[in-house]
Length: 229
Image 1 (cartoon, rainbow, N blue to C red):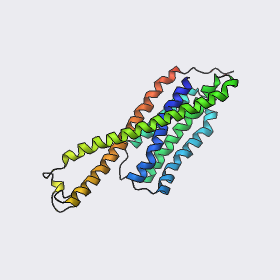
Image 2: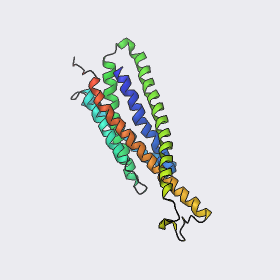
Image 3: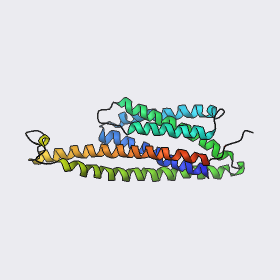
Image 4: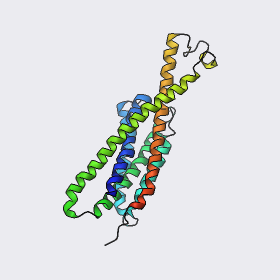
């Protein structure tokens, strides 16, 4: 049951992040579909690499240690993602995605091993289905939550930014594209404010997911330490 709970949390936190990146890159950063796919591909490579070595690491370390390391790496990558800007390069996205993939791989294999080590072999078929179901429910709830938070945070940031739109603001005076004395200038200014507010909304979401990933680590003490046979 402890493994089910951690798998639920992993789906809610880490899979929610993967759902945010494609619309972030395509709608906000202007990436094409192919470019967005290539930028997020290192995440899968990191997961594959970590899963290849996680089994060997289980011979040296307890499952709790590897899971804690996985959540720590994922939290570090989310901390880096909370510093995303419009001027960042594609390499930043690829590096943070690779780190997140490493964290996901370090969590999945030890968590699965620890979860099924206490389950009777005759029950593993039922246990596998419930185990997968817990992750799917967690990822569905997590994705819905971060999408709702993205909309809310974007609206809050937009309301905060428009407070500075005034005829007394020198940036908005003169013959620039943001001249609020014309309809075209107001439309252009609103588009830029919405763009900046969306970036703030994404950054706030990444920061929130980082905090959630760190909050999970102390609960690893609940897991039973496995005994070598």
